[in-house]
Structures are given as C-alpha cells and as structure tokens.
Amino acid sequence: MNKHERDIATHPFIDRPREQRDTQDQPTIYRSRKRLRRTKRRAPRTPQDQPTVCRQKKKRWKPVLIISSLALLAIIITLFVVGYVWLKGKESRMKLPAVSKVLDPRRSGQPETTLIMGVDKGSVPGEVESRTDIMMLVSVNPDGNKAAVISIPRDTRVKIAGHKGYNKINAAHAFGGTALAIDIVREFTGLPINHYVEIDFQGFKDIVNALGGVKMHVDKTINDIYAGYVPAGDVILNGDQALALVRARHDVKAVPGGDLDRIKNQRKFLQAMLGTVSHQRNPFKLVKVIDAVSNDVKTDLSFMKMLSLGRKLRGTNLQMSTAPGTPKVIGGVWYYIVDDAAFQQMLASFKSKQEVAPEKENQADTGNSSKADIKVVVLNGSRTAGLARKVADELTGKGYQPLKVANAQSRYSTTTLYYADGDSTVAGTVAADLAGASQPVLQGSASLTSEYGAQVVVVLGSDYASQ
Image 1 (tube, rainbow, N blue to C red):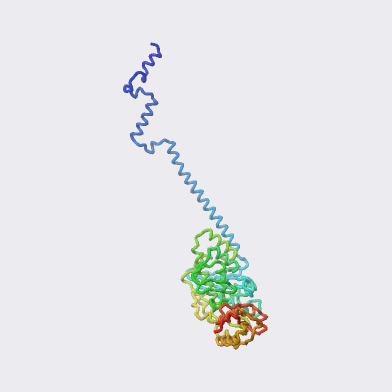
Image 2: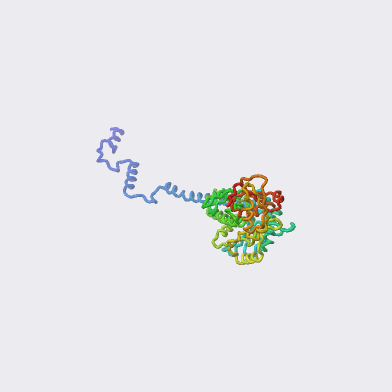
C-alpha cells in the first residue's frame, strides 16, 4: 500500500459512518464556528461582548451632537446679531439729531414726559402743510406703573416766537418743524419734554395695513366729505378707514363737537392700534410693521422704548383728558381758548401725580357765547320761498347773532357752507346746527366770505329738508 492509499484509508471522513465521527475529527476551523454558534445560543451577549468596531460606532454620536449644538448656537447668535444690526439701522432712520438737542434730560425721581404728534401734510383742501393734527402729552411716573394723557386741541390760541400776535398751536410745526413745535408746547404747558414721537399721516395707513388692519368699535357711521367713510359697529379698519377716523371732524352727525370729538376718536384708535401691535405674533408682519414705522415715524425712542410706552397707553390705570377751554372766533379766526386757571390745576396734578380730571360731557359743546361771535350769512339756493329767513331764525335761536339773508346767484342741489381763513372748524360748528342738512358740503372761499363780510356763508340747496 503506497502512501496515497494509506492517507485515503486513514482519512477521518472517508469510509466511516457519520455517527462515528466526533468533534476531534473535524477540521479546526469548523470546530471554532460550531463553538461560536453554541456560545451564541447559550447566553445573550452583553455590551462588553460586542465587537470593538460596534462600540466605536455608538460613541461617535456624542461628538456629532456636540458639533450640531455648536452649529445651531452659532446660527442663533448670527441671526441675533444680524437682527440687532438691522433693527438699529431702522431706528437710526427715525432719529433727528437736531430735534433731540431741544429735549429736556430726565431727572432722577421725576416723571417722564413724551409729546406725541400727528402731522398732516396738506392732505385736506384748504389746510396748510405740516400742521399738527394730534398733540398729546403722556406723563409716566418714576415707577413706570402709572400714566396720564393730556390732549391739546390743534386750534389752541398761543403766541409763537418770531411771529407777531397770536397763532394756532398747530402752526408751530409749519413755521419751524418738529423742534419749534416741541418748544411751543414746553412754553405753553411749563412741562419738560423728555421724548417725542411724530407720525406722518400720509404714511399712517401703511402702518395699519402692515398690521393687517385694526379692530375697534365705532359708535357712529362717519361720512366726512374730506376725511372719508367709516362704518359703525365692530369693524377691522384698513389704512384708509383708520386715516378717515382720526381726521374726521366735518361730519356734523358723527362728530358734532368737531375737533374735540375728533380728539376722542384719535385716542380710542391709538389704544386699539397699540393693542393690535401687542398681540401680533407673526414675525413676517412684525418685520413689515417695523419697516413701515421706520419710514413714517420720527422719534428719539428705540423700538423697545416705544413698545413700553404703548403698554402704558393701553394700561387700565390710565387717565386721559383734553385741555379745558372753549372755541371762539377772534378777529375773524376760529380759536380754542384754554381756561388758564383750570388748565394750570390740571397740569399740576398731571406733573405731580400723573392724574387728570375726567372730561366733562359738555366740553365739546361750542356754547352760545362762541356762536354769537360767528358772522353767518344765509343764501337761498333752493328756490323755496322763505327758506333762508326760516333757517336764519332757527340759527339765531341757537345762539348766533342776527343773520343776513339773500338769494344765491345760482341754484344749488346740495347745501354748501363756505368758510374763510383756511379753517373749516367754524363752518363745521354752523353745519352741526343746520337741522335740515344731512350731508352738507364745506368749502373754503375767502373771496365769497369777504364779499358778504362773514366767516361762514351758508347756501341752502334743494336737498335741505325744511321742517
């Protein structure tokens, strides 16, 4: 038997039954695999039994999380820095360095006073550019938990430095801009002015539209021939409607007190708008609002300071009033004459305690004494015999001096009131007393009023409902 035959005869897997084979006869590599399988079946592996490669893969999550967290933090910081720089850039557009110099520094322990002005740049026919339609003084106590507001009517009679005689306080802005307006209010009230906020009415509606409208309750439908239309009830005002509300003073039914009733509407709307801003959570709308504010507002305050002031103006512990006084025609010009004694008393409480007495319900009434100063002529443009004399007698009974009457040179379909001196307030007062005119037209005409020697010329139209 040669060597090859002996190897075949002695080979463990040849010519031997399967049951006679033992593990010792198996190749080494086969036995190792069998043991591995048996070990796996006998007991589950613990983490310590896992291969080294598997444990290393699990450990890699920790640095990944750390790197991700650092990257997220870096993004947040970058966005914050970019947003801060963007916001400061917007704030810089609102600041007028020359105006900031005329402001009074706030003293420790003293209240903080801010002058809020709404400037209407000639949008209403017959009115001069850049006059302030809104002037509100806001005083916040040193603790910041109490505030009060005094509104100053636009027609308030004052002296303006560098100009002879008396003028209306709203003319200060037209004469010398924001700085002069601040100086005149400081001189008129004797109060330090620490801050100011000036809103341009032409861009006012952009702010409202950026907010998506302002919800508020309007007591009466406003249909002002110059300002516009505002429906009554709970409405969401768009930019045009909001602008009409804060301007309206010619609708004799909705704002019979003229400018004084308009001041009340302005304050109500300001609070409603501030409420809308404070509840705004849409970041995209907030960006639009900030952009609109930076275009249409001039102030020395930061956005955060303005938000803080807005919260004070919406607070329940807030008192609001108007400088006490009465309208009066002097030298053919319509003024608001402040009651000095009552006003000084109001200012003392306003400055020391941030409190103001509530407005009297009849404060908006022009009073018979002021009506007696208005020279009115009534012309009959309706061709209804005796109508002019009848209306003139009715007006005399309401406090006006005896009126002249005549026939108009042409026929009128709509009752129209012509006024002088570029001011329609006096005409609005007369219009409020015309019982038969539901929607009279007010129009400036110095030539016609001069021809008849009157402040107001009333031309009765065919629409006048005689009672």
